[in-house]
Length: 79
Image (cartoon, rainbow, N blue to C red; front, side, top):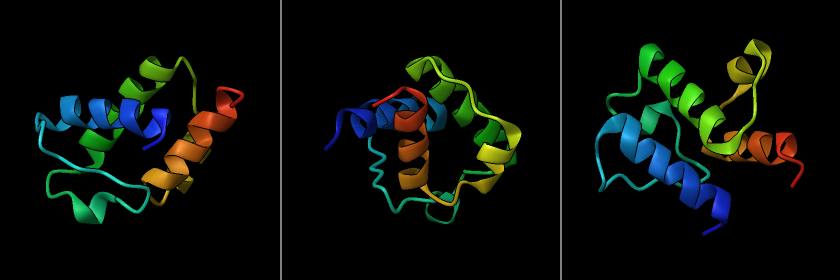
């Protein structure tokens, strides 16, 4: 598991209040029952804080799964 995925997993655990939640690059809102639009905003804001990056609305709207979020984080963080 990559460092980014591990750190993002901790963000998901916090946002969804579920320490048993397992995410992968293929995870999307379709796979997590409580992942709605409000939770999505919270998730993005907490990910921005965790990684010290900022996303545009267009970038966030285009995300299809956790893998794309990881790629965007790593691109923004210069990894």
